[in-house]
Structures are given as C-alpha cells and as structure tokens.
Length: 166
Image (cartoon, rainbow, N blue to C red; front, side):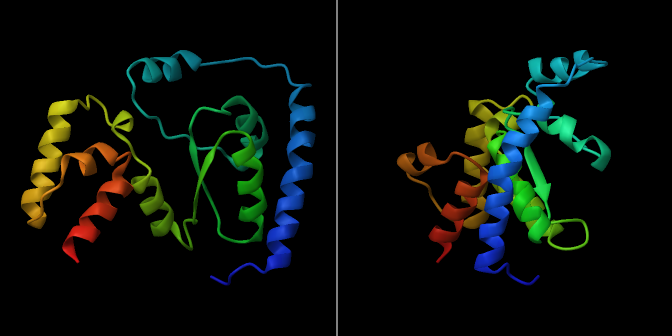
C-alpha cells in the first residue's frame, strides 16, 4: 500500500474538520425510530460485544446513532479511509486500518490487540490468573506483579511476551 503524502494527510484532516460539523447539523434534523433495539440492550446488559455491519447506504445514520459507544471501525488505509477515520474518531469511534482486499489481517490484529477483559464474556479474575499462568508456561517466562497489573489489553500482553523472549 502506498503511503499517503503529507499533503493528503493535511487534506484528510481538513475534510474531517469541515465534515464533522456538517454531519452534526444534518443529524440534528433526523427523527429516530428504533426497531429491535431491545436485542442490542440485552447484549449490553450481558456485557457481550456485538459485531456491527454499517452498510454504505446507512453509514451516516449509523455513525450518529452508535456514537460514543467504544465501537472500533475498520476503515481502509487509502486516502478515503484517512478522512473517514478522522470523522468517525470525532464521533467517539476507534479505528483499525485495513480492508477485505488489502490490510484486513493488519486490521484484525489491531482489533485483537485492543481487546480487553470487558470484551470477553464471563471473564473474571480466575480466568485472568489462568491465562497468565498458561502464557508463562507456554513461553517459558515469568511476569512480575507490576507487569501483570500494567496490562490493559491483549496488545500489552503481546508486547510483554516479546520483551521477555528477547
């Protein structure tokens, strides 16, 4: 994938800066009617993480409706993906860059790195201890208590494993 130029990065930032208030203004004119929202609320109560598919014709409404919920969106690594990421991040979304044709594995790795205990159904402290013990055994390493306490997501665990295996 060809890297974006400095000019393209600046242009994407400008599009995001102008586009966000335009989308906000348009969203203020929407009248919402929910259908099936009880299913989403049930998953939220059960602390289960759904996978959302925002189809192209519904992206604008979905961006506004699902804002500030900690959703991670896969966006392409090209110029369009750059300004789209700039806009959706302003609406409280995280981004993982890639697409089904290019960079999809990279995006999936980023989603995995960002995963926390809250994303795993029925996660508890015993499962956490089991995971740490199994990782230590599998890789022949030992974690210090402060290292375990500093881990915030799967990416932190992966980084510590790499540091200890050097």
